[in-house]
Length: 251
Image (cartoon, rainbow, N blue to C red; front, side, top):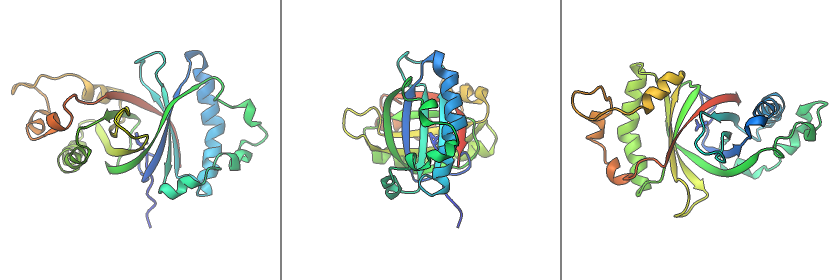
């Protein structure tokens, strides 16, 4: 049976495969600690993640870096730990069980918690996706007035639209959608995310830039927006549209 894994890109979030559940951990890393953080996570803690994956305690691990600065205290990195199902979350020892993967290095010599801040974390479940490789990912954070309608329109209207554009080589290479499991409630930051994958930064920026809506413009969204009910479902638009770059993925 073909192994199915989840990213986001996620988030999702590897490039070619997806799981059903993901734990997103958002970190704020000071600029002067950036290189140390990336080195320790990719050189050492990725080995611990790989050992956990090999034991079936984890399905995938990805580190993403946010492009640009929105707020000085906002998270600039996000970890995506992926799982096959919710029951796999019950194994809380995936990291402590596999510290031997560090070899002769002691955990306190390569830790990253002391100089970074965990700003918030989320548990999400995959709703739909279009498989593809991508280095950059635009994550669209949304809080629709009708979550069911949002998911349904994305499946029936936007997924075919994105699939056609991907096949036609417009720069976009992947797409996905996931709903939030936890935290939940009216005051939460977002309840669903979609993500658009790209292999070039310029293609991602092209997707983000403003285009006029008149009939003479080059806006590829004009026709589909006339069929969409997103003005009702998501009257204020996305809460955030954040661009991330993949640092490393382990499966």
